[in-house]
Amino acid sequence: MSIPLLTHFGLKAAPFGRQAPSDALLEHRGFSEARRRIRFTAEMDGFAALVADPGCGKSLLLGVVADALQRADWAVHYFALG
Image (cartoon, rainbow, N blue to C red; front, side, top):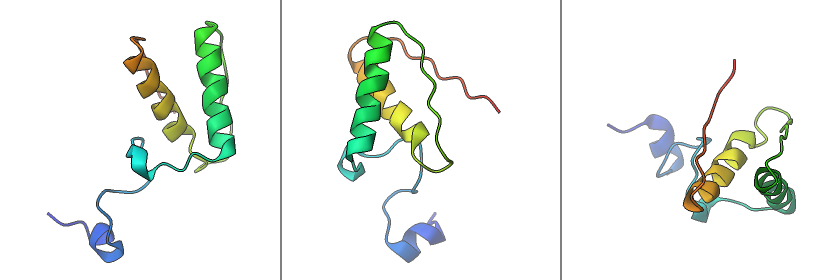
């Protein structure tokens, strides 16, 4: 089944999901810094709060960090509130 949005814009996958292909990820300076800080906090067994406006990529960022941690043999649990 073809999704009109995908065919209209010539996309291969639905945009704005929690998982993005690594070749489609724009790792700008802010994203990279946030990724490093969250990873550091996890390695220090600390707590962190990730707060930003809607649509800024918080879920995507957490997905990237979770994938990296799982590849490093961490157990990652995701809890969505709301």
